[in-house]
Length: 281
Image (cartoon, rainbow, N blue to C red; front, side):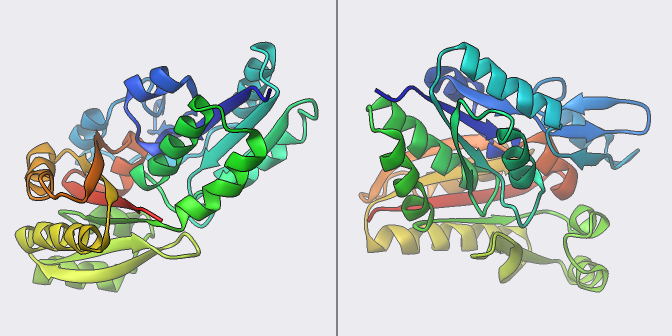
């Protein structure tokens, strides 16, 4: 019988109890300030990132190669024969390529690295699906074949308070970012099939942006059963409002509520609210 380890990076935005429940190994991103460096979700929390943004916008870096190598060595020592690693989109980070590079050093471990082509709890949805399949005893090959099918039925959308940090990080054009701020336009941002950000829609003001997220979730729920995640970055009350508008839908088959990682918070600032949806198939 396959003994399968599950590994993901810290931007999957799962709760600590979820990692513990399913024995998921986490590869932490790095948050880098001028005078110090932190490990995402381990030595720094999102609230600290937000409080320090007015003074300094840090940079972020993917999990280092040694940490990835040590994690593979750890699962080998624990007796795992196989490993599935689910990463943030290769269109947004070099993490996927780094993991594949290190995997070559562990020929005794059968490793599959899956590019989620999304981020945050959008990636987390696929990690949860994989964890549940492992728990139910599915074999390695079956899970590997199922992941891209499941991922193709997921989507993620988010709205943020300010475009300043996405603009600073080069995630959106400086002209578009400045115009958006002046006009109080809140873009609804998603990730395309190549795993790259694109503007799905636009709203005038945050309230309209939240209502658009609710409409997106309800459109999917109207088509059939869905699992819906609600995420936030320093905007818990707004995220709870979004959740309150969908929680009683008869087609809601499950929910997950979480905050975004410090790494994501560096690029968005406080005020993000988003939904990730997995449609049944």
